[in-house]
Image 1 (cartoon, rainbow, N blue to C red):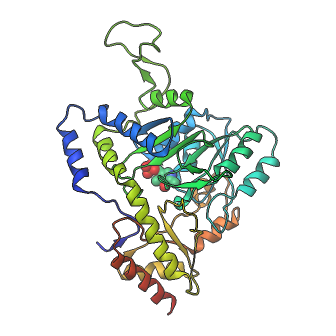
Image 2 (tube, protein in one colour; image 1 turned 120 degrees about the horizontal axis):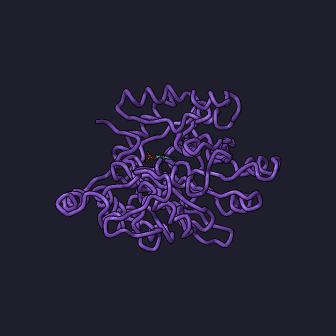
Image 3 (cartoon, rainbow, N blue to C red; image 1 turned 30 degrees about the vertical axis):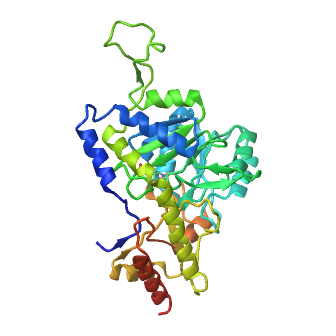
Length: 383
Ligand SMILES: *Cc1c(COP(=O)(O)O)cnc(C)c1O
């Protein structure tokens, strides 16, 4: 099958956990979900975690719990998967993209600041920073901006479980810990760090947000006696809000638990792979990489920048190396162009897109395979 850019790692422990759940009483809404949530909350250091059906559902519910509606205008980055901004459109809100920093590919906090300071108070209700490639956005800085302008922060950490940065006091701020973000969302799609098949998680330290998420995940329906307006008997439930069926299954949660137990190791392996790429390309002409130096980078992706990106992509394919492009800027998608965005609006993102390529990066990538990738990239550049 060649060498893909990302791939899940499934062991016998994962298979056993899924089979055990299949033989147990609950395929969904059973004990594995709460166990997964508790372990995940501990892993990232958050008070609450709510598991949902996928990362997109996590973003949508996060937006709803933060009160996004027709009057909301939200800032995010164009270098992300479309779901980051779609979540706001689902709620009837509007998106305003801010350009990225060319060195990191992350939303440029200076430009966020300029945008907020040059707008009427109350224009924006929130910001969705994306920990692109696994590099954590400095949410400590973003929080100050957000607070000054009455904005919430929903961090899209789909690339970054296990990621962190050092704050101004030298403290490790883990993605999902939520000291500076109101909610943080994760995805458990197989190309991400933790594979559930499909799955997502929302973490928060706000009890109020947590309660909303729990009920919105399952149709806005509750059976909790303390929340009911009346109680007709054991069968009785009430729908309090217009929610969704965004539940994860017990089968997926069981897989999430065993996957999570190997997560620390997986991130360490990703960092080792990144270091080796860094060393291999450090002195090579005509190739550069996104800033990778920080110790807390979770390396969902390893992105190189080259002039002939399409040439490199095609050349690698002839050697069965399946690199990928992350991302086509969201504002250039025809749907978003239909909302008024156009080429040239976000020059850094567009320039980045013309040169970026994600090389294979996943824990089970062997040293030999990685060397093969490195050799082929260098061979192409020397042509
Ligand atoms: C994968 C991803 C999502 C969506 O997650 P799904 O689980 O595929 O719905 C959202 N944002 C980013 C940045 C992602 O990489």
